[in-house]
Amino acid sequence: MSISPLPRINGEIVKEIQFIDQATIGDWYCYQNYTEIRVFRYELPTYKLPKYLPIRIFALEYLRQSLNADEVNFLATKKKSQFKLKAQVGPFICNTRVAGEEVDKLLKELKFSLSFSWSYDPLGVISKLTVENKFTPYPHTTRPKIEQFMNQLEWTENTLQEADEQVISTSNMQTPIAQEKTAKRGR
Image (cartoon, rainbow, N blue to C red; front, side, top):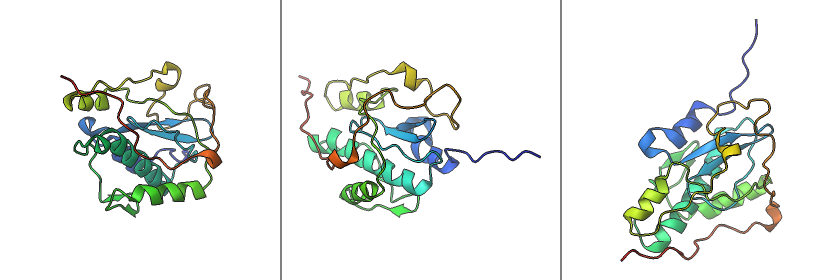
């Protein structure tokens, strides 16, 4: 009798990121020795998370990315928040947007390596929202060698082994803060 391996991405994580097509806010990538999640338009380096991703660690990275992406892209430009902040993600309750600082502190203490930055919006979700808010569309940087493996529940041999991009040391990482909006209002 063969025992099936543990899933690398459990169903609870899938529901958080992609519970319905209209509410998809990101993707995940199973590398050979780690997992990454990518929230649309989060441009800072993501953490290389454990290979078998526990919901607690996922929740911290998910909150860090989604709070920062929303703050930088919408709240900082005095637009209504675009991501719905859930009261609970995994075992964590998040009732304020300032929780991002605490989440970032917790992840730094875990000493995960950082991966590369990526202008990420493969489905055009954020680009559509920025156009609706009279800003220029968001330019997604395509990476076909990586994107072809998005949202796979298991790592497949000869696929994503290590990010080809430069890996960033966590000791040099600064807390994500809102940056000035570079897009101009439409006329």
